[in-house]
Length: 204
Length: 159
Image (cartoon, rainbow over all chains, first blue to last red; front, side, top):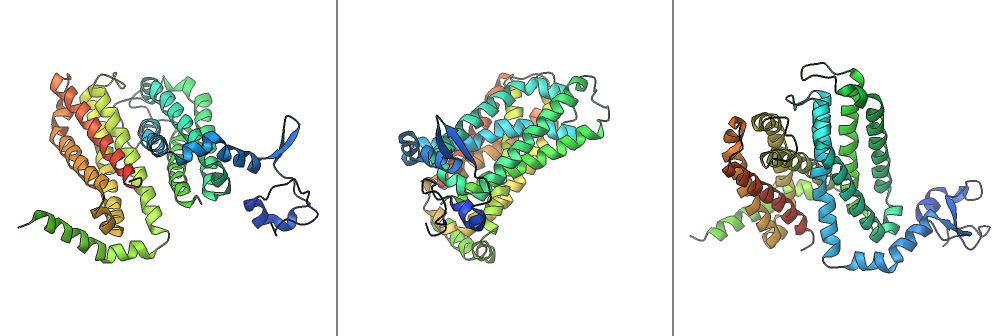
């Protein structure tokens, strides 16, 4: 590749995102290298390895399995994010007045767990098939960022408000922090869905 | 007269409309509205699942059926409205392609039945205190119809 400077060691495989944006910084910036069993592998090489693997290729080129996994991933949103939205609507005060946040969370706990598990497994399989393209997709990185933020937000709620929430009644005014968590969660999940859908458009 | 001809002329008219041209002329509009469509579907199917599974005795059991129904229906209808508006825009942009798509025909069929079941049984659900056997079956059918709509919709892209 023309973008790789002659000074760069030849075992480094071209990294399109990195090379197009920071070719002039190649010598000064640390790369996201890792060692697996003593062999230096970049994240990009690992993604290439995944999508070039027999399993990844079979998945990507299958006539029915890939669409079915993708359908599970998309329609699984209803169970996973749908259940989260129910709690968020309650936290923000927008709706679901007849249940307290504690009641919603304890009753929908199996949904959160199975929904997340289904989304995670189907998502990993989709990534496996398209890992090299996902690495080069900017929208996929945004999706992961907001997924991480949504996760941190949920952990924050778990630590700060779950111990207190069973004392909240149907009519009690929720703390501003809890309401903010609801809004932040709604925003993050909307963006995760948006960037996820957009990723599917942009893969090439 | 031939009904299919009337329907096809609607598809042709949609495909040539100003909205369709706007949708096709912009790089960002179509994906953006598709995202809105998916967010609306998440809201809609999420609320439908909570209510229908409650009717079948799963999930929000500390609340009565009428409470869950009254809490979820405003959001269900918000989801339906957003999904229909965004879906109309998406439809216009590729109406002639969709005219030849069996999954799209299936989606519209499922959607019409699902919408009818939701609209017809809304009143009964917001008044219900005990789940009758009939309501349980209605819930199962509604769940299958709404997810059938979603699956057929996703299948348009694969056909």
